Amino acid sequence: MNRALWPAILTLLVVSGGCSDDGTPADLGPKPDVSLPDTAPPDAPFDSLEAASEAAPDLVLDAPVEGGPDDGSPDLAPVDLAVPDAPVGAPSITGKLSRTVAPLLDAKGTIYVGVYNPLIPAFPMASVALKGSHLVTTGTTISYSMYNIGPGPYSLSAFLDDNVNAVLPFLLPDNLDLVMSTAKQVKVVAGQTLNIDLVLDSVAGASDGGMGNSGVLKGMVKASVSPSLDGKGTLFVSLHKQLPPQGQVAAAPQNGADLSSPFAQEAYYIGATLPGQYYLRVFLDDNSNANPFGPNPDKGDLVHSQPIQVHVVAGMTTVHNVVLDKVQP
Image 1 (cartoon, rainbow, N blue to C red):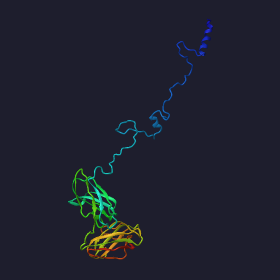
Image 2: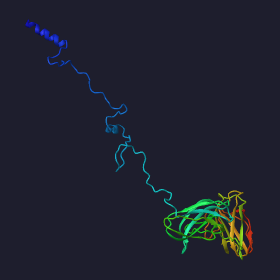
Image 3: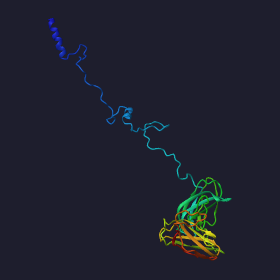
Image 4: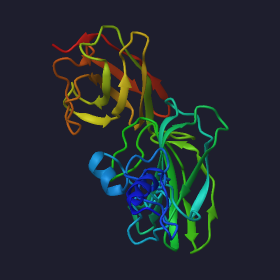
């Protein structure tokens, strides 16, 4: 073959995309993009958590609980380790309360149940307060339970604070309260629950039988003038041998009295009073500033404009209603 033809043949082979002798394709210029497709989920725009954190610093990520296994599950809710409000375990004493005596007030208030050391009866070893109790209807029962009382003998008693004036630490009944005439003697045993029903069968300050040489004074109090404030407060009722405030011989304060309306009225009761002539003083502490140990009305209180004289008769109940017709100037 003519040597002059070789350059032309070689040029023709290159242009026509020929192959080398070992089958390797000739270099045809820039290679096409043959990288693997992106297999990341379409809703994951970041390549790493670090990038996500930098791009969105407010993103909240679930973290394993300290000291627990990291299984990747989300923390659904915190565990409440607080001590439960309700007592745990069986009560030491439980039962129902009712009344058999007719109330002199409305038979509404707080019932206090207490267990007492027979040698120290003034302070309860344990107690429970049943607020908002209503024993208006005969036959009504109210449940009570007492927990964590140590083993031993106790006196168990209850009363309804019908005149709303019992205060800590001396939770003792006074005039007008519904009480038990005799305390129950009980013996608490560890691990056992005593079921004891209690009956309020007496009114403090009154007598179910003959009153002997004593008499009782009671009545209703209402207002005939508009109060200077809200017409609510402590109603102070006292009996005096001399013109008040001198010569006081008995008192029956009543907290929570309401004379805000001309139709409102409150009952009072003074029991076990020796017969004789007395002055009766009644006033509503409308501005709530009277000294409970020596109460006297001051400006703004509801009072009666004229002295009130009453006569208490032995063995009888004297009824005397009172009208507060003046605002103390």
